[in-house]
Length: 256
Image (cartoon, rainbow, N blue to C red):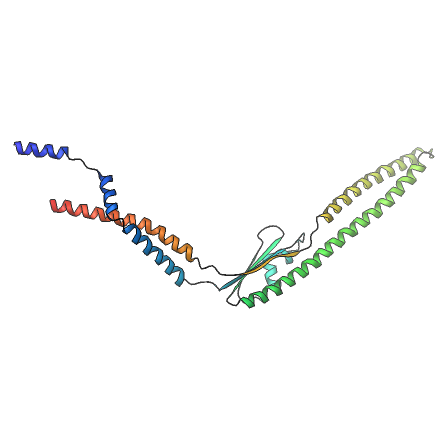
């Protein structure tokens, strides 16, 4: 009876520290926190090496389209259809932002990329410059027309203002008054249009080649290696925790 009571007291006095036991087990197995992540990092590097890659080189061309709004010169699909038929590798044309067109082409031969990009850039920029000159000339012609109209309107207003005081007929006076008001209103509108078109001319920019570069296709070896190492850290915690659980469970089963 006394032995049973003593044994029960010993069991009550025994305390369990699972966190301390876990940390102690981790410390004993600390070498595995290095081995497992390193193995996973090497596996990541190996995957990056054997993983199927794209073509060896990628060429990037960015062209500023200025104020051109023609779909044939700014729409990616139409640009590819009109200016990209000679591309032999994988090609992607898109609009990263307003007034810019970017072309990405991939190929194993760097010289082929240089040649194909040159043909594409020259053809597209030539047509963009042609359209730019058209828009510029049309804007200037519209300004000249408005200036000529203003000269005629000023002349009309001046004549009406000269005849108005001399006229005694009320209907004719009203007629001249209407001519003056209508002409002055048209003159004011034309002046506003001329100012707007002059502002457009001030901000007109010629299309040009922003950048043209060829780079090697990235292999992502570093990214795969780092990802493998990080995954290895989590995996080492899982494996060592499972290891500790199995060891403790085996002891408990043996005691039973």
